[in-house]
Length: 321
Image (cartoon, rainbow, N blue to C red; front, side, top):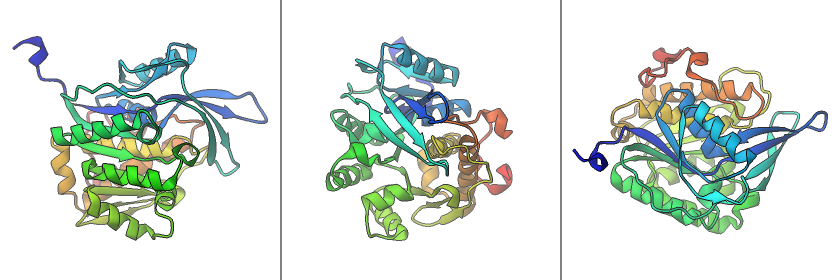
């Protein structure tokens, strides 16, 4: 078989921004740490033992090299992507309750068409999903991946300061939903996108539009997972909160990890029942809890959760209790 025709190993492809989080501390020196929602998702997957690559945009500077090293050390293959004049950054200011606000210096350029062979799951979201000129490329990616048979996952992770007009953002978001199989959003995202609409009504609207699985996360209040035939509430795992940076991304990465370990994740999503949803949600909750117990976005390794990287998907509560 010619080299170009060899089957590609099945993996997760993550597309989106990588940046440096500058953790501002009025009582101490600022700390620079890897960040960006897609990068954090990819790192979570790599540390859990899932084959994963990321297409992102970095500068040829010290920060870019630090991010490339962080991804490689976490088991993430970095695909060749656009080169930025300088690597993106965000200043994160942490409140006493551990929540964070951000000030961004970021660019997300247009992407060339992607090679999707071997990508069993394609994930994107956050700034790369909304911000021009690259947002159109990401929309095309979701369509192409969905039509190729890959499972597509999206976390909008709305940053109001960067997204702009809420009406235009909502139209862009809803235009993507026919090509999205799994959608995760926070209650803050839901309230921003659908002001005045209750959470259950938001979930019902989303399930009618395209996704087969909708996960709604609510920090220390836990999360809920919904399909057209089943739903489950999952409490947050006990933890000591240092800060919440990267918690939602770790939750998303763990969810993708659980889905990927099934040989046919796209078909799996169509047949998820309550025990399966609970198993996925409990795993995601554990990974998020471990992340908020550290400073910055530092998702746990599989060994820290007593999970072997090659463990099958934990699709029943007894597997991960």
